[in-house]
Amino acid sequence: MKVLLLLLIGSLGLLGCNNKPTASLNKTVTTTDNTIKLRPLEKLSLDGDFDGDGKKDTLFEHIYSNKTMNAIDSAADPFQNDWATVTKWFYDKETDVYLTINKKNSDTLHLGTAQGLYCLINIGDNNKDGKDEIAFVVDRLDDSRTNTCAIYTLCNNKWTLLKELSVNEAAFNFSTEQAPVFTEIKNYLEKRNGKWVYKADTQDDYDLKQDAGKMKILQLDQCK
View 1: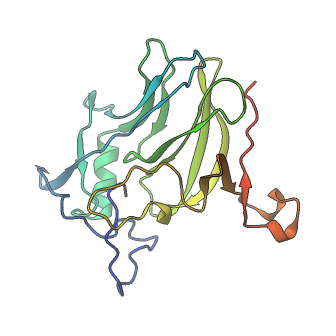
View 2: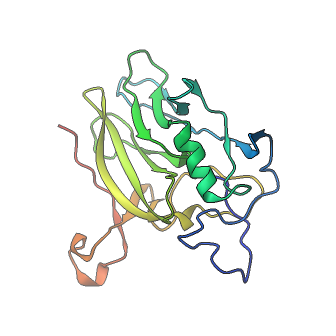
View 3: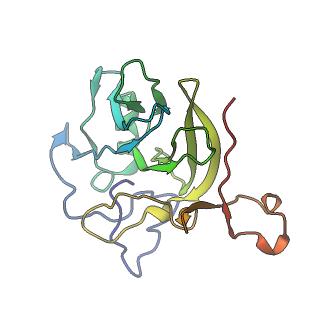
């Protein structure tokens, strides 16, 4: 969950697939919605030149209810409600997580029903097309800790998927009281010596067997 984790040593199942929320931080409780405890949602933003015009853009995360036709600022707290209640709350609200740039007529990237994003990262102009690419992981309403990092670019003014990487949500665990802003995904997508590297999904992604599992230099194709 976006608000993660004080690890409880010796407790079983904290990272298990059947109970996605683990442990609560002290600052989670706020109000109630028909006995459902709510928490404020943290929405990410990101600066970069995403459209290639040489000017700074800002990309914003939004969480919207297609039922009430309003933005959602607080949602069911996964640490103070059971997981089935949290999932039902989001689906009952017909929530949609989406990304927009602070410019008129810019494309909107809809990501569907979810709690938000674990991370939103500017990985720079990796494919040398004059635009910064973005990487993010959606906080899905499922029971699995296996997830996907998606890498997108604006192609002909439309958000276009360039690559997907498998990640484990344990990469977003933290033990501080304040949730960090993740600028990389440890062991999956990192910047080393000025270059982005990633962990490939299969052995076939490596030229040499002995390199399987190691981080590779990220190379993205230009969109067509």
